[in-house]
Image (cartoon, rainbow, N blue to C red; front, side, top):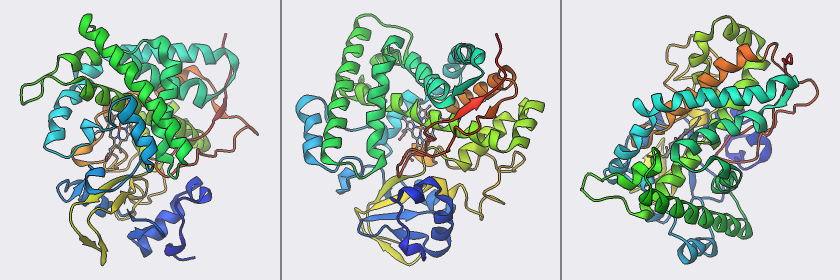
Length: 411
Ligand code: HEM
């Protein structure tokens, strides 16, 4: 099979991307997916160069006529008729996007992180308390999903008791990333998206009446550098972007982390022996099993890369998951190496102006989680006979469906 026969929508390819990536890197570093206007880049240097040139590779897909998430006008109309148009201030190109980032970034670093750290510890402890007496758990549902959801819900300021409903909206938001949705599916996603918008609007109104110590309140009080306050429309879309970013992908990173740690027993042993290696472990998991495998940009003029001309307005798909295993950037790219000298070079959180604002929060959640879990769940192991280690189907996100763990039960 040549690289040109690779079907990146084939569930079998998606289950284990990495041989396909290797062939693409070697044989077709600019790969036009057959029958589409999507050009996939897999080499680290190419992906990096695109991310560093936002004026040539725009993140405002629709402005250049490219449709990424919604294909059907009927679904897009639902936002216009019943809610707010679907746009994301943070997804705009610089310099406009920079104004929004300067408001959002401080929530997730420095004092913002310090303030939330005790709550992360408390949430991990509560989840572990529920699991520990049982001697076994399904890690994704019982731990990896609730931890980041509870943390981001608290930070944004949504009531914790609304989490079951918020999770439904959040999963619907992420659903189009699977690609190839039917019209009925897109309409359902749009209906849920509009419900979420109205819910956020109601929360904004409450904060305007009674300010709290949370991100929503800060957004209602924030001023853009041009001097005006954010509109409800802007706040709704910033809040829903942060909410979704804040939970789905960290769930995937936590689950992949446990899977890798326990299938390579010497890694588990080395982390038990020396917990100061956990931050390095987290970086390697992000590199090896990048939760966001790829995202899009649109060239603002025709560009030629490796002899292939990509027309203005086509979709350039940046494959972070492949770039993170590029042998020209990472020695022995498929091996987990806690002593790698470029541990943070990976692009699991992207690069350039759209670098993930929640990267430090996600890292903190993962590190605290592993630090607290290892001593509290003794003799942690993958449950024999209950795991098939399969992933949810999808082109963009990489997520284990389930992960059954066993350990010594404690009273
Ligand atoms: C393991 C966890 C996470 C991964 C792998 C991840 C990945 C990414 C990636 C790859 C991007 C760049 C998008 C692009 O290049 O266009 C991004 C952007 C973003 N992420 Fe994350 N993220 C994670 C956690 C979080 C958290 C915890 C939050 C919220 C607190 C968050 C919020 C966002 C937002 C709002 C953006 C858009 C930023 C912009 O376009 O300026 N993410 N994330």
